[in-house]
Image 1: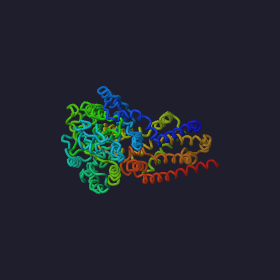
Image 2: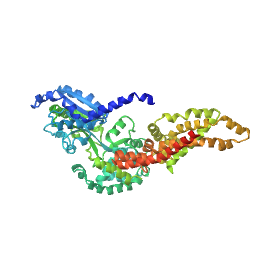
Image 3: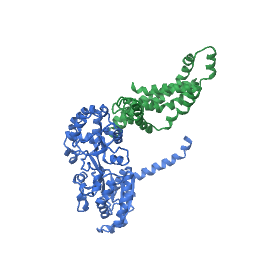
Image 4: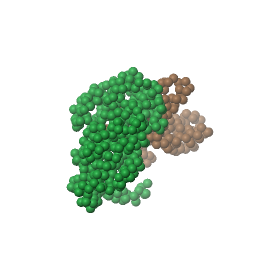
Length: 390
Length: 213
């Protein structure tokens, strides 16, 4: 074992040194490229010929951009897109640091125009992203305002998903319409509802969050910054959740992961559960759930989230970047997201969507509520374990 | 102590298999000798998911039992319960323990057993006074290995275990990655390490004794 390892050790050491240097001097990397092209473009010349787009996520996100949106965009505008994709957000912090380094160095022409990443990056106090509105990108007018307010207009939501209620239509003819209806249904049908353990998947969190919103004020979480004082309201919610346990699946068994709830639905163990809109729609399309399973949304809705793309503040190709986002928000492109393999919600309001896209989530095509996550999310999961899990 | 159940039952089953492999003659022992190794080639994630489908309520076993007349709902709750952890951990650690015990039993020479038989010892007496004392130290080393594997386990208790109480490994990961409380996670890591240390000290002492001999 040791013998074959020995020649590799210096290589590993060298790699470490290389990566360490790369991380510590981001200025050097960023400064070389854009300086030459810089002076020409500053005079507000709208004729951008290229666009630099960094993205991350799952491979379905990559497929959406590479196979569908970018070719159509290049054809429509003649702009060449350089697309860099890092799976599952690996290296997101590194990309952020690279943009920030260009700001700190006083550059006026940054080498990344568009960046798609976790929502939290866009609103950091470093202020690296351009605030955009309908005057820059006409289709932004079609985007629901709360999702834009959520990131202070510094990024554009272009697709989303939310937690919905899945139910077995053979057993349930009138699915609950509100959260209180749902709680009443659970108590009337003991053992037939499950939500997964919050730490293991967002669809379980959503059920707990709805309980928190029932006993606290929703506006406090979406319009104000984090405040530990808000968590005082949570005691009532956790008490209610604890009291609900005997009526849940197996008198309070919470399956593991989002897929755990889908699995119980599939086996007929439960008749109703909180699930992700995209996962359940994909599972239904793939035959992994029986056709009797239907999805619906309660009112007010379970929480969900959008995926955002932001334009960097001093992007070299601002016009091209705005054009790309406008193109992405056209109903034609939005339909690809809804009806394609992604099974996402559109970034624009449902009313602008063609009818075939709307039927894909029939019963669930409502707006979703937001959840700030972060410290709230960590505390919610910990407190759930301390106060609700038996 | 439920925690010791997988270790205890796993060791006993493995010991029986190893005895059968060492002293058994005939087709069933040969068959056992071929299949006992199978779980070793199945990663714990896959085994855990397989156990869920296999043992869940309305799962494979429940389905068969219901087909032959077990009433719906009579099947015990195994998945999402400590019983699920025990069954899966036993199943996963069986081949390793058996291999280890087989080699321990092989060290007992046939001539010793034959001479005992010549002077009229029964099978039970041979087992009680020769095989068991000679194999006990090796078997206990095997127990320490299984102990170390089970106590630090994450995958099996995470996927098959109850929501609460959690095993230390699962709880530690939650505190580290979900609640961002690294100090509590570190404390739990120390606790796991101290528990493992007990097994490690025993193992080192046993090895030391062997070398002196």
